Length: 464
Image 1 (cartoon, rainbow, N blue to C red):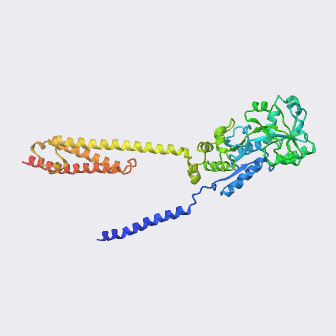
Image 2 (spheres, rainbow, N blue to C red; image 1 turned 180 degrees about the vertical axis):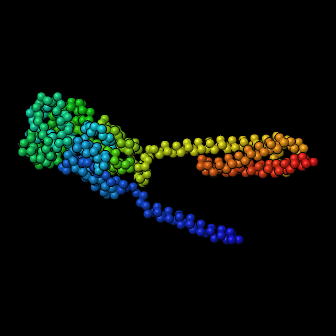
Image 3 (spheres, rainbow, N blue to C red; image 1 turned 135 degrees about the horizontal axis):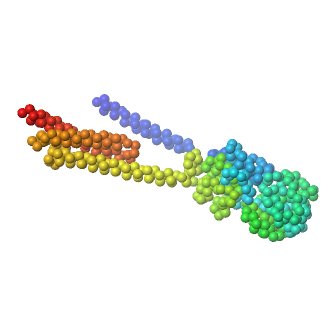
């Protein structure tokens, strides 16, 4: 009666608990904002001088990240070469995770920097000067003094890489390193013949230099020859009037060399954080995915695994947006292998379970047959239970055979019990072992009872 009442009282409690759990989960999911954001992005990015395009681009990315709950610090540097050196050194302490870099600049030896993305819009190599419009061929550069920006900047590296080669050695050009503002001032005063700038063609720096400082843009023929010698370069055009359509500045189309901008990582950022930065880049620089699928990769840098996955999937996966902490434990590309491994494991467990069950069943049938062969009849366990010893059962060999079968049945029963509680048995399949255990127990009970009768019969026969 107490048990019945206890059961009657516990049922409503169980229902209340279930309802409470459901409501709790409902409130939890209602409180979670399922809209993806960039709150898991907290990184530092090396850019360049404050007047340069890299700095302006990272500043723009930083503002966009902030609007979506993320953080992207903007660390000023001298430029590309300094960025790569600092990024490689930061791999130990992880004070910086990403950097802008100019294509074609090799990373420091021994570093493990990775390519994260290649921006769609390239930068151009501008050669500016007070009287630069008169320069039309490489021979016109003979004896000129050229400012190449800050030391270890991408401009410095690129100009020296092009014009310091043996092809141009006879021209006797001199290269000087100056900060961008100082270089512009020296050009305006005529203290430099030319100044090299590698920036976006729409950068305010170039527009101001041409419109307000009165600098002219050089245009050299046969730039395509130079581009052919350096696989990371190609040539393009600045249209007449691009910087002032009224005064027509420049007055004619100008040829320029162009080079891609790369986003480089040092492995400090996790998978989800790298994907968050790529999402930001995709939103701020349209065409990023298509451009990287078509022209991605680098001869000098290995591609980040997170970036490869991002571009292959044409954007972030659901898990990368909603459970970024999980993809840092294991990238989504590996999940299919885990699922396959679990499937294979369950299949192996299922095969092992069926094999063990088959052996147990075969062993039980063999022992039941041994009982029938010993007792001389095709007896079921129920019939053995009620069987009375016959004259031909009184032989000592029969008692020994019964004892042997009893011992083997006991071992088989223990084996069934071990298998039924094994962790390797698939859920729900333990009942098959329990069934076999019941069958063996039935045979044991019947045979023990008959063995007692047999022993008594043998004792009575010996006494008479």
